Amino acid sequence: MLSINAAVSDLKRLDLLANSDSPIHALDARAKVLVTIIFSISVVSFDRYELARLLPFFIFPAVMIAYANLPPLYFVKKIAFISPFVLMMGLFNPIFDRAVMYHIGPLGISGGWISLISMLIRSLLTVGAAFILVGTTGFTAVCQALERCGTPQIFTLQLLFLHRYIFVLADETGRTARARELRSCGRKGRGIASFGSLAGHLLLRTWQRAEHIHTAMRARGFIGRFHAHRRSHFGVTGLCFVLGWTFLFITLRIYDLPGILGALFTGILP
Amino acid sequence: MSHHIVEVKNLQHVYPDGTIAIKDVSFRITHGESVAIIGANGAGKSSLLQHLNGCLEATSGEVIIGDTRLSKGTLPDIRRTVGMVFQNPDDQLFMPTVFEDVAFGPLNLGLSGSEVDLRVREALERVGAGHLSAKPPYLLSGGEKKRVAIATVLAMSPDILVMDEPTSGLDPYARRQLMSLLREFHHTKIFTSHDLDMVLDLCPRTIILYEGGVMADGPTRDIFLNDALLAACRLEKPFSMQECPVCNKSADTKKL
Ligand SMILES: Nc1ncnc2c1ncn2[C@@H]1O[C@H](COP(=O)(O)OP(=O)(O)O)[C@@H](O)[C@H]1O
Ligand SMILES: [Mg+2]
Image 1 (cartoon, rainbow over the protein chains, first blue to last red):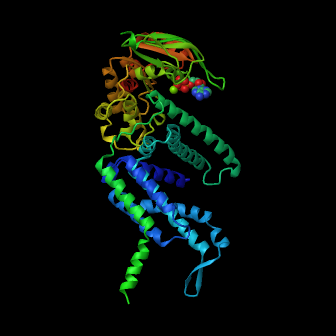
Image 2 (cartoon, rainbow over the protein chains, first blue to last red):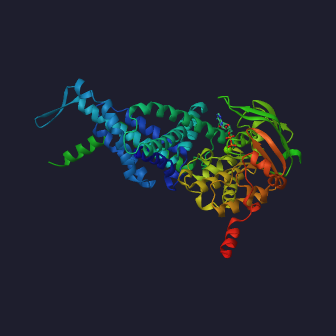
Image 3 (spheres, each protein chain N blue to C red):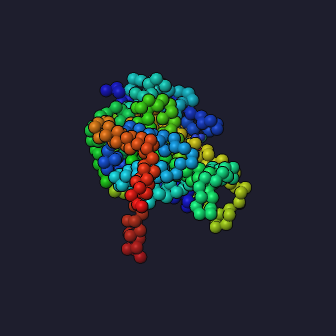
């Protein structure tokens, strides 16, 4: 059950990254949320068979990771983690969509495969951007920014509690699993039979802990509103950040940069 | 100031599963008093304390803080007045870093950024946890968590301090530190403890709970001298009032 604990500390690490200092971290949360949304829309709105024109968009996560001093390997791993799920979702594309689109020598590549890869790239980009957003801003601040941009409070509050609840659940799971492991003496315990009661027990315990924490929050004056400590205002830097990236994304979305570059090269080369 | 009075009248609490945790408890604690609530495991100490800031709702009876009767409407005010340190620090710490956790209360009080900074640093210094401020709470040791949990409450500068077993899990040095901190806190304070030497040191008055009821309420010294009462409530004298086993032994070895 070590994997559970590892997964949790990994998740917590994402939250902690948001506390470091960098030019990106210092930006207003709303600016980052806005850019992330525009980025995701630009990426997702491409044609389902698009490949080459998606690639320039990798510049955004790359620049953000570099300037925010985030550990690149950590994000690569996080993002790689989701690819099996995406592949599973797109599994049937190559089966249903057999029309050949490209030829590499004698090999014909069907539209299904292209759309599968395109989907994979798009989810890597958008999920990566979301991770980077949380890693540079913090979940609380992201929710607050959403609220300040007009998302109903009931929704953002739910998100926040969900986020907290995941940690509580993971914590309790880790503890219960360890207790069980230590007392099953390396064997499988009582096997699947004990898992039912274990899961029920876990649910109750998590519930109780979540309730205790909520009590503690209310005891310290919580009345349904999270305050982020980092109070920032949009400012000129925020505006430049938003305008700069938006300009780039729209340009990349409208003009076929790889195509133009390719044409340039083939034009130059005889 | 009548503001710091804590009055409990005929309090009873029955948990949903039918356990009667508190039966007919009444007492009145006046301004600036320092009171210990002691009792065996499961006597109902934690349950009682949790009524003082409305974390648990009384099945019957009432709680009055200052001039205000505890009810849904007065709860926010009462929670500002009564600072509560829970028995399990894991229940109390929930933010990503120690600093943010301690800042949570002051931010909810609507204080400004610089004031919050100041309060957080002050509170952490007072419990000797200044160096922990950037750490995530879940990476702290048990005693460190406890100290941070105490800081979260101090940062809100409550008028009445309520603590559930504040010294359990602390090392002797941290215990001394906490004791001197409590001595400096001149408002009303109420805490439960199995650390009877601390009780003897800090609290002129003691209330003994036994199976959910008040068995004794009076001067600490008198209570600890009453052997029959202590035995009936599954309690023992503080070490400082017992004969010293080490000295006796050394006397014995000399004789040999
Ligand atoms: N949530 C609960 N549901 C049911 N019974 C409880 C609950 N919490 C505590 N109890 C019971 O209430 C009694 C008093 O508990 P508690 O106040 O925690 O004791 P103490 O803090 O003095 O050790 C115990 O018998 C305990 O088993
Ligand atoms: Mg208790």
